[in-house]
Image (cartoon, rainbow, N blue to C red; front, side, top):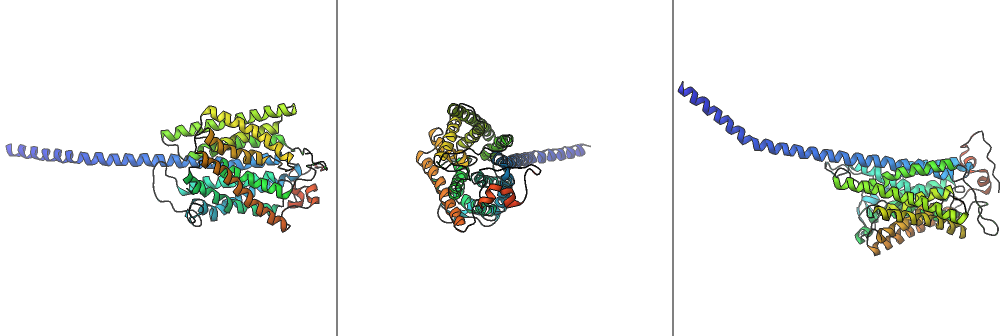
Length: 444
């Protein structure tokens, strides 16, 4: 009996010892599992966040389409809507084939040109907070490329051939925008200088705005836009409710544009930054709309809805480069100045007899420059880098697109005939009407 008891105790002691030795290993394994779970959760949250923001930015396309259609004649509505649709279709395919590789590839020519091959790279398998799956990263970036392209649609509305616009859209989204985007977001020469453009006041909006300015200059004004004495004549848009709805959609879409550019939200610091960026975006938009209305009211003795709408967009563009750097109060000032600039920019175009039907250059070009400079003035970004970037992006877009539009004009491919322009591009270019059953009268 004694021997049996001793044996049982020895077995129990052995089991307890083994269990004690196993405890640290089990604890260590549990810690590893917990860390992997945390990483996987953060990875999922960050990538879902970026996906939703990409959808919001893509949703800006119908916003642009509505603004441009509403601010223009009814007889050109189909043409404008069609151009916005094709910006997305052509842009996605060209950016996939060429643009993505140019913008986020390895250096080929110092910090001036990169190349990463055709298509999207494979996922490296890293599951962690802040790590982005290349597929969702592409989706977010291609939405920005399409935005840059569609800005030009409004500047050339009512007189450009549809085929010429398709050529322009392909060149901008496939080559021009990605090359200049690489200079900063692809860690090129402007990035090395310390230049900052958080979500694209210059990289996206100024590129689109100055490309549109080049198109408007080479095309010339619409028939009847300026009198024989050179004075501007108003050619009012046909549907301000549609334009207003478009601006509201763009404002909502901007919450993908700016907060989404943080690229992560799973940890406390990123979540805090996203919220501040969203509020700064809202404040700048509100101030831009208010101050554009007030200035127009002072000048014309009546408040104008179209100017207030452009003021909202101007405030959004102005805050895009610096929304992560400035305070709430500074965002209000930046938006207010943008609202004033957009009114001044529209007046300047009239003085120069440049026809920009929707005010795309004042909104995106002029206020894009302001956004870049405001990053230095209010946000503490390096002065020299911000000034250089605020010059380089507009010059790059304007010169390259001026050359392209001039070539198309020399080949007789740029502008529709006077008869087509008078009748409307919907019938002349597409053989269909936006408002079937209604008679649209055009007079000079």
